[in-house]
Length: 254
Image (cartoon, rainbow, N blue to C red; front, side, top):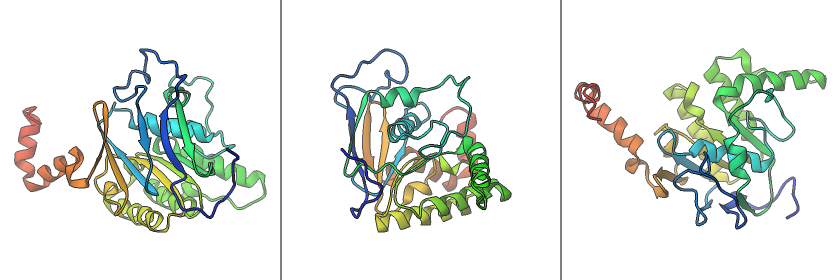
């Protein structure tokens, strides 16, 4: 399908991920993920899709695979950005996974951004240097606190049409800053002006009204609601009785 720079169609633009019929698997990660088999299909039906699950379930690897299929660097950024030296990189699981997945688009719109919290500093510095090389004012996201820089970045980027991939963006955000991001995500969901696929552990960010919430449970992707996620239930139990919860946790009963 011919790539387009813009469209009048509402998000989502990436409609489906499935395993290629000619895919060659192995017993090594990421091909041994429990949910990855020849019948794997993941449909995107809303502008904002939120993927949750425990560490090791493959949610971040899936986000990386979508980023690779869009032509984004595995360290984060958009097309044409290469903010990190990969000469000594070891983990390329997202790129490997993208090689066995088939992406269905309508239309093929891959302008946007791949956000990784752990590489935000390198990406932000790269943007400043690129702006100076072009004799333009740098965005200067690093002059703010880490969390404030994150939010300013989201405000600036997600106002544009495109596909935005967020891998655990809450890592440097206070609860109040998470609410700011929640409002931005809600605006995108309401306007359908962009597509967002996000992996998160934050119940606050899982609560975007109208967004599709998917929890990875073993070999299955289960469409769910906030109150049914394991994350929400854990936080709820802590809030209900912190002392009793901590006692159980210290005993290894949780």
